[in-house]
Image 1 (cartoon, rainbow, N blue to C red):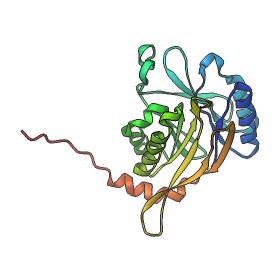
Image 2: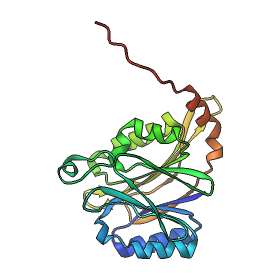
Image 3: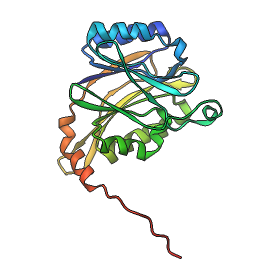
Image 4: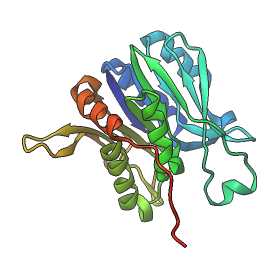
Length: 239
């Protein structure tokens, strides 16, 4: 399945880049967290129109709705299929917003896709639970600054490696504070039997989009092996 990551700098560029990605064959498009701040600024109707026109899913990032941070899931009929909510609020978000209480997965063309919003990725159990529910691709809209981008890349890589799952990240591009640098990682097994990552798509510090063709069957066996190895256990504290 062709998935696009979009780094806009404005509402108009978001719509233009999204349509370019769809014209290039993307069947799912992901935008960053808080590329616009609130749900009122999000051009939902225009994204819904594009989803219908190109028979594609669009995740128009994640925004504040006055209560939580939500990520609308627009299906190929232009409907809001559901909302993913940010589970782990970051810093000042905790002062005014309510965290979500569940993670969200959905299916597109027979492929199960999960959404983890920014800081949620820092917590390994979020991705692990979605993978145990069958998620094959994890979408991560984020707003990570220059200061945190290198550490953020490590989180993305580790979550992909430890779960044997594709990670699709769209990060905010808004200089001088936010560099973009969105990326798509997919796990694979090398000839020496070591599981490593392929970088299928990557954006720099630019307003742009990129597309990757992700085939979950290419890492199905290593994902299944990892799931079989996961153990449920308790911690014994010695006195």
